[in-house]
Image 1 (cartoon, rainbow, N blue to C red):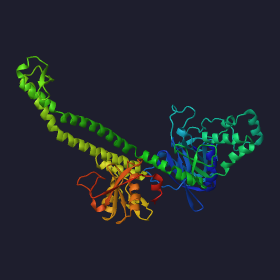
Image 2: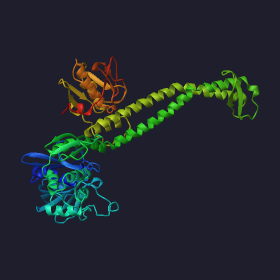
Image 3: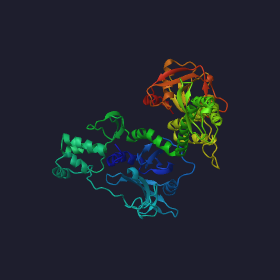
Image 4: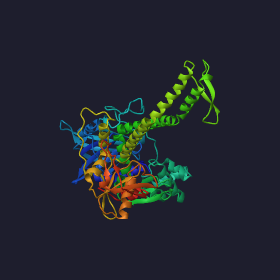
Length: 563
């Protein structure tokens, strides 16, 4: 289910006791649509993630860490000015709508106490975070400034008066009395009609409520359903198409399979959105890099098609030589002004062959023209083959960059950007930041069933560092066969068959073949892996390898990951 009104009601049951009366100590805006507010209470820090992402608007306490931009965005600076050091007085929800107001108390530059509201609107593509004065009701600033032409319902700009978005009135099932229920029951013979009138429910919740009322169309059944939102747990379920959903209760009337449960709703949300949030953050940060990669991939793919056409033409150039020889043998048959002639082809049982002519040239010059064309095409074969090889090599390089982006954490994108700058694909900025030194902390780290450690590079710079500098010569090196992927090092000189199978599965997962059922993985001792002089980052050659075939399973791989 989505962050609908009743889900937010359940979430606030856990947020209020954790955050109310806490002091807002730090404010970050790591990405354009996301905020992290750090509250200090009872000597403990609580990180509240607020995301206005159009596809996944959400809010919960998180333990995930993200790197922050060197220069804070404008909205983060405004929040720091007005809210940093303030006390959170209360958190309230507007009815059962997807709007949550955080009430803060702070002191201004004159020493006067001011009360401010940070309004979080989790409303799909209209999601926003708005700071305004409680007394003045005027907007100080907001995460997404909206041009009046794009939203005529209300003005969403600094200094404008804050107004609620247009809300559809409905019934609040959380506070509905028995008398109100009986009145609605009389007006709605069909339980589904009553469920449609209840506010704050998404489609899954509405269907579940309808199921409860179909079983027993009574106030008792109605309250049983809504009481679950006052005592929330977390349940993660899967649809028949393996789409994951999270609920604050366990639904019985939906066609879903239970995956796991968690008594802590915030912890479950943090884990549920961890992968998707990471992908969103990577996508936001890697936009420029990914555009360069996709443009180069597109250009190279077109170039390879064009070169292959040239190569095919060159390799089939014998026709030009044959036409030249036949024309030379029949010069007396060519009359002035002819543009085409059919002559017997003595290479093919004297069948007639059409030979096109240039009327402005003599018969001998026409024959020479065919010989010249033939020689030019034959001489081009070596050059075109070399160009095809170079283009395919460059395409493989950009495939490896795309795979690195797919495997990256947000903090890894800077290294990928640096690599493309150094390779000349992205223009160097005048004030280029000094590249951070790669350490083991940058890598993905796994522990096998045997307790042995596996290290995984997440981009080409990390791959080179891991393979050529970090690994011991007797460690085992793994890489998918003939496709882009991470360099994987098993820190052991005598691995068992089980160790090899598990390390190979990790290598397959962190490759372009992640979704494949059968992935070939090469493995060899690190001392047999070399980097050719002048080769691009991440490119190595090796010999004496063995191979194994594995099927990468996400849960199996990620369960071995360690911090």
